[in-house]
Amino acid sequence: MRIIGTGSAHPKRTLTNDDLSQMMDTSDAWIRERTGICTRQIITDEELDDLAAEAAQKALDDAGIAASELDYIICSNVVNEYVTPSMASIVEGKIGALCPCVDLNAACTGFIYAMDYAEALLQSGRATNILVMAAEEPTRMVDWNDRSTCVLFGDGAGAMVVTQGDSLKALKVSSKSNTSVLHYKRTLEPTPFITKEERHIPLYMAGQEVFKTAVTCSVSDLMTVLSAAGLSKDDITYYILHQANFRILDYIRHRFGVDSEKLPMNVDKYGNTSSASIPMLLDELNRDGKLKKGDLLAFSAFGAGFTSGACIIEWNK
Ligand code: COA
Image (tube, rainbow, N blue to C red; front, side, top):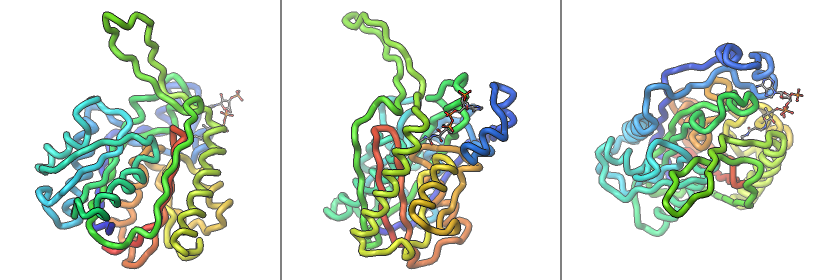
């Protein structure tokens, strides 16, 4: 795998902590101190698939290839308007591609899972150019009366185009089933045969348990991929971590012992955008000219499942 283009797209509506304080019993001070989040972009009258297609098109433009040259589209997504067809198939139509398309759901870790699938396709020679993307609208999953969860999330989409290459140095994904700490259950339509009352459960999160598990998994995954790649923590130029919240990221940074310049963040602007957070941050770094050929990037993410994953990839665009 080699990354040749990145793109991202954000909804237009900015929701500030002060806006939230008008809606519920919370404050800018509480949200900033506990999460580092100041604003988030949230979907109003846009469609998530339009944002996804915008991110995809920007990634193609950055890569300098046409949609017709894509051999596969893999999209990480938890919820969107369509249960079927897949978000990848919808994006395929919007950007004018013609290739196999599939969505996967590994919650906030989805983008690293998508990279794992892409690498397998590239290694087997079954694809040359793959669009690997994530599009998420967690603001459709939260209970807007639950101040402990709704303040944490924002929406967005991120994408990258990868091609044949040897930039991926190591990748690890894992899952340990634990549905109780973090879940969302939608209501399904009744059938003549299912009479039990189905209850919609908005996003539930046992905040402190998720916090601890996230830190433990991320530190362990990063150690694993560093060791698999024969690298030390100082060899990494940037740690691009799932932007869940500032305190989690800072704990990981301290436990790992790396300088803050190595751990870029944009959670203050976007909140937790689930699996879209890593490709969105990667695109921001790329567009800001912060990435140099040969830089080593470590990605790490964690989320419902409980899933987690990390990888190390050289920037060779
Ligand atoms: N505004 C004001 N007060 C709030 C609040 C809000 N938005 N949300 C919760 N509180 C209150 C609680 O009701 C509680 O009040 P009480 O002491 O009177 O009962 C108090 O703040 C402390 O709540 P607690 O849940 O113990 O806070 P915390 O320090 O654990 O912080 C999180 C809560 C969610 C920020 C924190 O647990 C966290 O970051 N967890 C990980 C979340 C995450 O990133 N998940 C995604 C992983 S993919």
